Length: 394
Image (cartoon, rainbow, N blue to C red; front, side, top):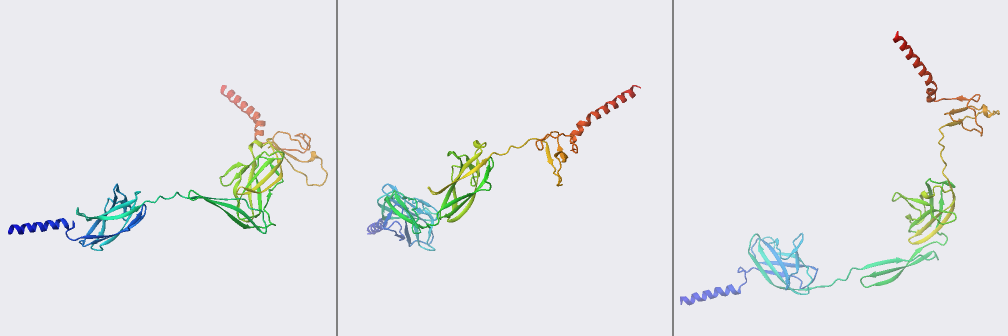
C-alpha cells in the first residue's frame, strides 16, 4: 500500500512538471501587436507582465523567419538587433507594461515568429514566451521622381497682357508632360529701352572709364547686360569690362549676370577699358550694349565713340614759367622777364632766346655753384700745402 501511494505521488509530480508552463509560479505575458506589417514599417508591440514579482526586468523581443533574424528594436536612443536585451525596460514595482518600437529590416514576404524573453535584472534567470506569429509584406518602392519646367518666350504685348507657354515634364515615375500658360501685365506704350552715358565725348586710350547704363520700363525679371567696344568697320571686340563680383577684368564678350533686377527704371555703372593688344589704337569706334532676360535678347543699342591716344610725357628736366605782364602797354617778347631753371634753352614763341638776354634773371642751383667755384677752392688748397712744405723745410 505504501509503495502504491509513493508511486502515485511521483506520477503526480511528473505530470505537473510536464504540463505546467516553465514558470511554475504562474507568471505570464500579454503581447499586443499588429497582425500584418510591411518591411521598413515601424510598429508597436505592447508587452504586459502578469504575476511577476516587483523588480526590474530586461526585455528581448526577437522576430525570426526560417532564414534567421529580420528585425531591429529601439532601445530609447538607437536601433539595435533584436538579439539584444533592452536593459531595465520594465520595473513592475512601478508599472507592469511597456510599449516597444520594432522594425522589419530584412526584405521578406511571409509569416515570422515573435519570441519574448524576460530576464530579471542582473540575473541569469530567463523566462521565454513564444508562439506569436506576424505576417510580413515586402513592397518594392518606385524610383524617385524628377521633373523639369521650361518656358518659352513672352508673346507681343496685346491688350496690356502677354503670355508664354511653359512645359512641365515629370519623369522616372509615370511620365507626364503638360503645358502651362503664364500671363503677365504689360504696356504697349512702354517698351523696354536703354541709354548709355559717359562723361567725355572722347575716350583716352589706356584709361579706364565708366559707362552709365540706364534701363527703362523693365518687367519683374533679372536682366543680364553686355557692353563692349568694336572697330567701326568690323565686329572685332577690342575692350574688357570689370567684374565687380569677382574683382577682375573680363572680356567684353561676356554678360554681367543679374545686372538689373525687378520692374521699373534703373541705372548702374560699368567700367571698361581697351585691351592690351589695342593700346595704340586711336580713331572712331563703336560702343554697343545688349540686354537679355534668360536666353532672350531684349534690346541692342550702339553709339559712335572717339578714341584718343594717351599723351606722351615730356622727360625734359628744364621748366619755363612765363610771367606775363599785367600792363596793357605793348611790350616786346624780349622785355618779358623769363625765369629759367636748369641749363637747357627752350623755344618760346618759336624763337631761341639767348640766356644772356637783357633783363633776364638767371637762377643757378647749388650744384652749379659748386661746379663753378670748386676749381678756385682746389687752387687755394694747393697754395696752402706749398706754404706748409716751405715752412717745414726751414
